[in-house]
Image (cartoon, rainbow, N blue to C red):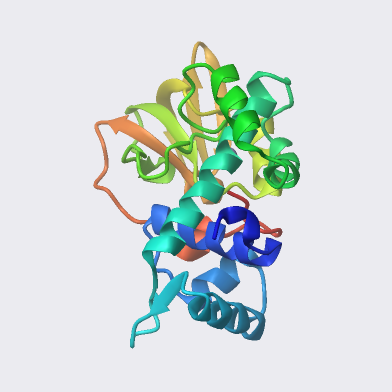
Amino acid sequence: MSADDLTDAERGYLETLCWLHEAGLPMTGANVARAMQLSAPAVHEMIGRLERDDYITRGSDKVISFTETGERQAEEIVRRHRLIERFLTDVLGIPWDEVHEEAERLEHAMSPVLEERMLAAIGDATTCPHGHPIRVGSRLPGVPLADVSEGASISVLRFENEAEDLLHYLRTTGLEPGLDGTVAESGADEIVVEADGRRYTITRSVAETVSVTADPSPPPRVALPEQLVLGTQRYGR
Ligand SMILES: [Zn+2]
């Protein structure tokens, strides 16, 4: 069975599980419901279906694990999604806060030939425009920008939460993956990053979802689900 045989709903769930897994959050029905902004009964039903179809298993502690097939499918879906996003920004010039929905639609129309051409077209880019590795599993370790102390130099790695409303907000701040700067202020409500003589201001709650490398670096921390899933829409990938 290939990823093309999955229903849209199943693909969405596998993507969500993959995202939780990458973010270091437990793969549980509750976290899936929160991430997809769906009701617990709806999630329960679909999780049951994915289990019957042998994409996932559930432990006695209710924690979900991928089967080998499930993991392969999920990674393929996520990889394609990120590849298309990168293609849309770099080759077609679509702003990075607008590519998610388009990528979602195009995912279904991908043939191996098109995929190969897209890969060639993006050159040596290795991440989606939001900083997530196209080859799933190769993500660089980072810390939340909210944890970094004033004066530290940082490099923005990725936006963990790709909900469209959050991405629109992030775009207005000017921050983007790859930006190198210094934390000029770390206040209770806002964080200010300085780079190239410009100041980038972002709310503390959103800074929880921005992963950076920092020097000096705060200790690593897995973000809390509430912090990663704070969009009003689905979180996106
Ligand atoms: Zn992305």
